[in-house]
Length: 288
Image 1: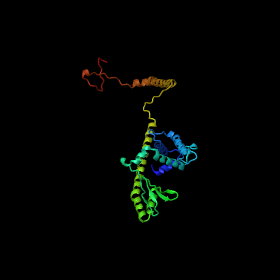
Image 2: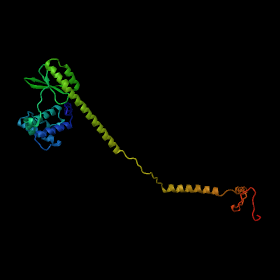
Image 3: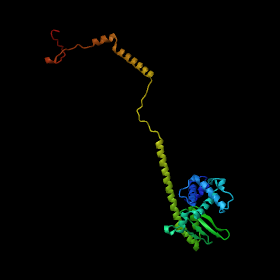
Image 4: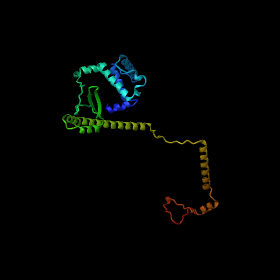
């Protein structure tokens, strides 16, 4: 989780990130072995705030969750409640207390130190692989006060260049340039690759869904069904056409018959048994 992600989530009325943090903090503060459902988080949080107001641990006059739900609160109010839950976890959660009291047994490093200070003796803090940089200024009356110095990689690079060549600021600039900036750049490239992979996965799932929803083309042979009236008309038209053609071809005119008989050649009788070949002179047998 990056600081800018939490900042954006606190501005939203419904955020999965804030819901997950809220449930996790409540589980630790109440020492629950069974995770609290998201639907029960608001009820459990209201009970805890009421108990803290009655005991005097909180100086609030009324519980803000009586008026609005947690999602409807202002971002500053949400952040205040999350900070209170963190303090409750440090006090009440047995697992966290065990990790604080015996960190060396499990090889856990739970301490952090400032990365440097400037010429005005203000300490600078950096956490994780985000470009966010904080500055701590100690005041005798109001105590420590934190302020955000950088939020983006460009701001972090410009801040490192703006530091003077004096010894405390020079070492701070060197640490930012050689350690923090490469770490932030690697994290940005990693998140970009993850986002590209996520987009490709979404496109592939959309393509598969589109293919599944697309109707398949029918491969069956098309069969036409005609009514009885259409079949009868087709048969009548065909029979009339065939009858007329047969009448015209089978009943020629008488004159055509005579001309055909006159133009027919005189038959010639021959037999292969006599060994005779056909010649131009007709041969008559038995005085025919």
